[in-house]
Length: 508
Ligand code: B12
Ligand code: SF4
Image 1: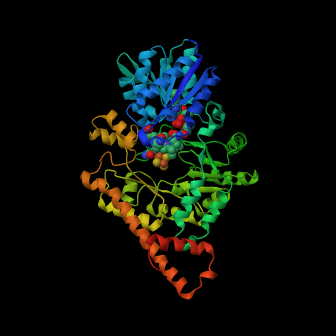
Image 2: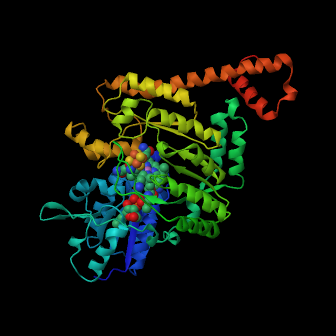
Image 3: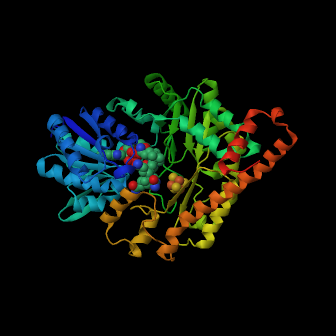
């Protein structure tokens, strides 16, 4: 079969107002493979025309039908995550009706819904894992009229059953993949703004006298950096947490040489200076991190970057080197303040290490959003209070709290299926797409009323704590007023105190 054109669809994972645009990194790697097989590719990002309202599906379909009539693709590929399922179903069925000969394939984390995709939609093949390991086999087979059913790591429907072929070996040397096919999208549409980070850093620590001045270090790192660009330095992770869907098993890093070349390439080609590392795990190889920092110095690279990391592999020295080389933000995934829940999450990190690493970040002017996941099967009011205590202890103001959302393929999914906690998976995925990380499914033994109130309870307690902390600094303010030493203190100390005083509407 002669394949001339392929259309790749980046399917939103959220619905309505929450549908935010995200960089289609995975599809740029997929598009590259098609091009290497002499196939013309077009990427269409559905986020560009997804909007609120009942007609969003129909409107979206109209736009895609126009694209199909223009491009005349022999293959359509869908990419997204599990919550992109609803859109994919609607589009897949509608497209099959109008264009029955087009082969429909799916990849990315969306492939975790492969059973639904192959029974309830018109998808022909679902690709598991990384496209570099199975898509070339599929394209070679199709182009030379061989049997595509033998492609490793692919699920398909055959004689009334779903078949899943054995996974191919993962790519060992990631550098062989090369750079993503950036020319397939309009890069300008995706570069995000780096400025809000310096703002949140100021908000985060402005009341903590010990760290006055630190935000200036961060502002310094972000000087002239107004854009963030995604780069992948690793694939896979060393762990397997309860709620995490992992379709790339083994942990692998690109070489430092590759990453430096990649950074230089995007800086020179797109004029960006800020980098957002899109790895599942950036610091899985500790020595790599130090070597990377040294390479940034050696090559005199001027960058600012944000990344994610496991707190157990963080050390004072690592934070120092990261900060010195431009790191302004790290996300750890602290998950919980309860040792019991951390164990249930199989996080492999102790509470005390989470506290230590989070606090250490301030010392080096590195912003940290504390990420909390609540609502695992063993969660109760005691463990929620342990999390509240943890949040008070680390005293960080930027906190992201989400209820645990089970996704197909994650370890928790088995528990949910065994306990029959979800009757209709399609309906559940649509609900998650609409509501995000709110209270959607109660996995705990607590009543819905209690469980739903955990999030507002944490938020209330933390607000209360922050107000107490802020009041504490009023004592300093009183002292300042009393001894009239205002003029002897630097502005950077006075300003936040005045702000707090005005905020609390209190007299000094
Ligand atoms: C960076 C990231 C984000 C970023 C950017 C999102 C984005 N642009 O994708 C941010 C922070 C915004 C984000 C948010 C969320 N994320 Co996220 N994110 C990731 C992360 C760490 C990396 C994604 C990435 O770019 N990888 C690099 C590329 C190279 O890999 P890839 O996309 O998988 O693509 C490869 C293959 O999958 C395959 N492939 C991909 N598409 C296709 C298509 C075809 C046709 C074929 C053949 C092959 C193929 O080939 C590619 C090359 O090898 C992944 C973890 C992971 N490793 O995937 C989680 C992950 C995708 N996120 C996840 C989740 C749940 C979320 C949130 C819902 C979290 C939340 N509660 O809010 C939100 C959703 C936000 C949104 N609006 O979409 C889950 C999805 C779980 C699932 N079963 O669907 C993942 C897998 C994390 C996890 N392990 O649980 N995320
Ligand atoms: S949550 Fe983080 S540490 Fe845990 S398995 Fe997923 S990527 Fe790895």
